[in-house]
Image (cartoon, rainbow, N blue to C red; front, side, top):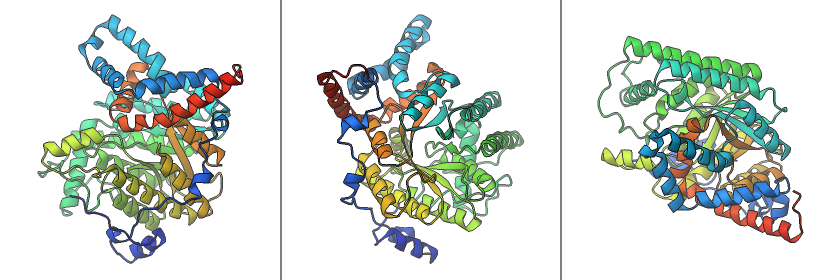
Length: 476
């Protein structure tokens, strides 16, 4: 089981004690909301928040958010999408068209690069930025990986044709450019080496710490066999793909953000991410960003260890901080093996972990180190981070600090943070409807709690719609 992290006095104390080798378990306390946090980000003025949004867009958002917050509707949709009905071409076409004009249009930027670009321009006009996500995911063979790489490269190239600074990041999944079976094998081997440091991995590149003493290791209970020559060749090909993508991002000065996966695969994801960051993050410019999932019990320790190790190497690191999207599958996997879940025991512990990590990263930024994307739909965390940033003297427009929310969700928080002077991005997945389905299903299945936070947006949107109707503002 993960060790419980005990409180201390301040994050500054953490920095001093970490350097004197005191355990992270003794030096952190949860950041407490400050009264000023309530005023920096104002979500009460719905007229100001949605001033850049048309009435028709508000109406569609209200309907779609209402549907996706209804568990009966979500359950029925999940059943249909996973049923044999999808094997009948006529029924499949009808279902996909329905999805396209409901969930897809609400949560996705389009089917093509050009449609995604138009979406970027629209949100840029509203003061937001876009994170372009070519929404390919798990791939099983090298041919598919090569094809996906070309899609990512086109995404980076296309981003430079859009208005300056309108695209904040290009997002990639390692599972799209490395066969998932190989990622599982690499993760097993990395876990075993952490258990037994004498275990030799001749292919391993220089990386940052991937595990902590509280990391889940139960996915690898027996010593795995070494990679076969064919697997080593596939691993080399995967590295080459990632390096091509990183080099393109360096060339275009476009940050690359690597998304996280579940704990069975995450060690390999971190290995790819950190080894690439060591190579490409230079001169104070973090090009390659990793992702930390705060709902994991080992998240804080791993973040601190990786950040400090990178600092010693002179490598500027960037991290996206999320809560996590694999809660059900993680808990079920651990339970099936007879182990406790790697996820915090309560939502309050997850919130505390997120806020601790956020405070640590803000301290790093204030001292001129690292960069962070706060990907959160939690209003308290957003307000708290904004207040903390101001108190630390982090200036408006600091390129090392970004807030982010999913496209189609938490628009009130996005606009509130933007009005307060922070850089805010929307996560914009794009691709053919059937290709983006895994993303949409995950939004429905894994984030029911997240979808329920849309209630705040729905209330504010409805208030603004009523205000416009009363004032006869139909032209917007």
